Length: 402
Image 1: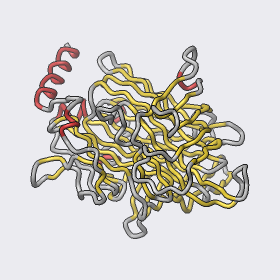
Image 2: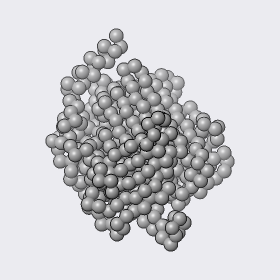
Image 3: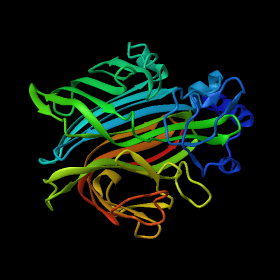
Image 4: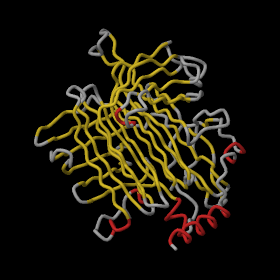
């Protein structure tokens, strides 16, 4: 009976809000606008501001949703991380109508060791007092509002400070993998940086709103592990903030990393110079040429679209995705040429009979190169080749019927 009711409601929702993979191509999604609208959904004109923008929208709002949409179609998550040559520290909160997940991890690069915790809460989680009602919903965008949570063994907040123009992250709790206590805090200053912001059209009344940042300066950054204080002030930050009515059948591959180039030394220990950030994806926001509209390279805060298909290859299919090396290459084999070596992962498996999905969130290191070709749109880069030497980062392999 539950299955019949679910299918019937899905049919009603999809009839009213058509999800059509071709619909995005009826809008100008190729142009990247310098300024962004204040909100993703124009309430006065009752229409979405479909398009791509170089700056963050203050309000990542959706139209007024039906109960069925809120419960079954709306998906939202915010992931942020900082990294330097010693540590990669990430956290994410994801909220769907029927389940919610939070994860925190700290990757010790030099010792190839990780601390992590993941909490998944189905609907019953609200009964247990682990409420998400005042988290992502109240953080309207990365430049407006605050997300807080207090769930089981993890407490924290991700808030935009409008006075200092910084995004402030505070996390504390106990890693369940090894029982080590943690206290993490940092600030991201992207007030002068460009973003990759997008209102992607899935249907006439169905959108996904995305804000991404990379190579962002982190300040007041520190982490306490089991009473030991670790200075993280030489880190760079990154973010992926998404809210929308995603398709029922969804898949993607995605990577993110940020790093400093160095001068005066071949081993990366010289003077820091250029700030880089990279986020590449395929599968969810592609155009007719299979180019992801969200793939972006950041150089000292300027954002450049990577306008070529990105191909992810799991090199050893005999093992699970988190245990295999990966190749990430552009279709020309030149613009992007990276190899990813995993260290550890968090796997989020959702199997509720009518809702199924597997998300492999893997972290490790990247080696390879980025060539300054015509596919780096609008670039004014001085370097013909950007070398990537053991840069810490993350890779996701995701599939869901949700």
